[in-house]
Length: 293
Ligand code: FVH
Image 1 (cartoon, rainbow, N blue to C red):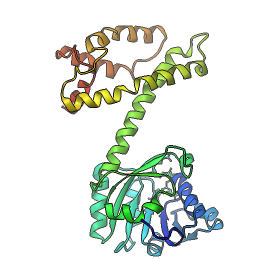
Image 2: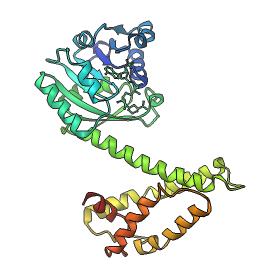
Image 3: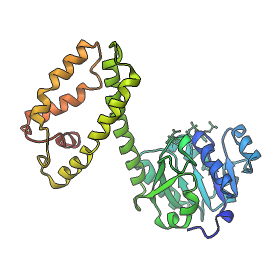
């Protein structure tokens, strides 16, 4: 870990919404911070707050051993760092990308003489620098880099190191985001069902939805246990035969309420396929097999 936080210089490339929020936390904690942004005007407020502004990305990289990159996408990382000398640098890439992009970027950094850590940010800008926000970053790649710069890296938000494979942070990030989108899809379908109904206002409905989703979240552990044991009947309280028998009610209710089933129908179809393949006494974990076949 850093021996003296006030003397660990940090370079940050990218002053979008996320980069700017992170930059402010390092400045507030007393870290010497060098910043660079393609559109120079975005660096002006930070200069007034104490950041050193580099004219080019290469100049910013030269200023610190620890180089944090938070740009739009993987292509912008390659573009921004094309002329930078990365030899001896510790590059931490917080730019969203796929696992394969993270692994390729790790190799790219290694060939240029840098240690590399990829990060998947599980936070939105208002959560940065707020200790109880629940935000954190998954890190994977060089464990030595993480150990050495752990103190600096946990200034903006919490950190969870998930191993040497540089693709794992991105994979976990995308897996959690995908689960979130599935949840939002269900939530939005539910709001659509009640939307036109007299006497069920969205704000009255919201706490019911939150309570139900919270109660059902325990199912995640049950599915994990079934996937590990291979026995998809373990602890099943509601089997697939019963669940699928309810599908026509879900579809009829959507039709009665004038709601499109385009979010819900694909999941119901997968459960019906599973039932047709003879898994009526199991829960829904077999959907994972259908998706990965
Ligand atoms: N904001 C969020 O809620 C999410 C939360 C989870 C993590 N994401 C990822 O974080 C990366 C940065 O996101 P951001 O919110 O800072 O994004 P923007 O505000 O759109 O800023 C983008 C910055 O990237 C620069 N940039 C774009 N293309 C290039 C390029 N070819 N060369 C150099 N820089 C480039 C852009 O510069 P400029 O437009 O100001 O000149 C901004 O600094 C991102 O991967 C999210 O997925 C955020």
